[in-house]
Image (tube, rainbow, N blue to C red; front, side, top):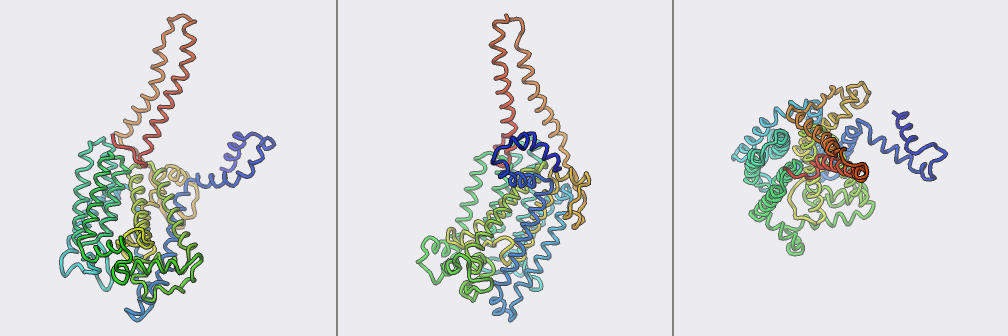
Length: 497
């Protein structure tokens, strides 16, 4: 591989003695680009970033929850122990999703979503679902709580990606693509609103918007869905007294600084106390009952206090790398289902990060959404790891990764995890036929235009046309490249046509 890259570099730049003076300065950048171009880079990136986030999350949960655990249970390890247990469950789910064949995932998509709808109905029944923070949205078994709405988000994302990918390949009409998806989303959203849970409603709305956007549906559908989600969130925010008070305290922070605005105010104090480098890990004071839910919704404030601006910025940079990796996997995937699901999952995780950090720093009203993989929250951590396992599975199914692994290229991570060989993506007959017809039409247009130029004219009149003919051919090939580029921009909002 290095010999091939060397020959290509030599062919592009010429001999070494003729290279420009700045060529050696571009060597490391070229090596970094070569590393990014390796077949398994996406897989290694998503594994590494997720591992760093999980370790940082466990460390901060231990630091932020000790005082709360000691006050409520007499031991500083209770919340941390539950978080470790749920992380182990999430790692099992991650490994299961990593090994699961893509076709099996698609076959189980609808049944999994139907089961989560049943769970959302059961959690509303008094005596089965438990009320916490004004919302009946938890199952509590043997002291462990579980939110079915977290599972519903995962199931809806998988089923929605499967549905839209299948029907788009079948060239279904707009009505056929929206009728199963939007009513199902409305049912799930209505059940979550009935709990009521503003944070999970917004999160599921983000998933719905991501599916509609990355599937390339018309802009009017996306805008109308966005308005519906915003109006629903606004109505839900003002329907309950404590949520309405949160919105009012966000609009006027000084109105109720000791009441509804107390958490947001104390979070900003903690961030300010941290300064640039922080007070040191475990040395923060906000968690000593000055900041409620310091280990959960407002753990980013504890990170800012103990690790300072440097630690908070480093965490955001880590999430930025996660976003780059997720969109890289989606961009390089050949399977439309994996492409749509990975892009939507990346938007969902980053949307939760934006909302959580936004209300901690005071840019948004408090919604109760957790910081993925960082906040203490069992079901949230487990389901996020499950989705990251699906993203890692998609990274192994990139065409170059499939070719490398099936050709016998050794990969230590795959060997360590004992993963099976990924199956190459096989287009459907409809997709293969459409691509073949498109290719033939693109190849036939220049030949047809060339054949139309009749040689019966005089040579003196033929010369201007032959001079113009390469320009027309260049324009045609440029148009072909432009149409190919537009087809490849599905993940960037290509409109459905």
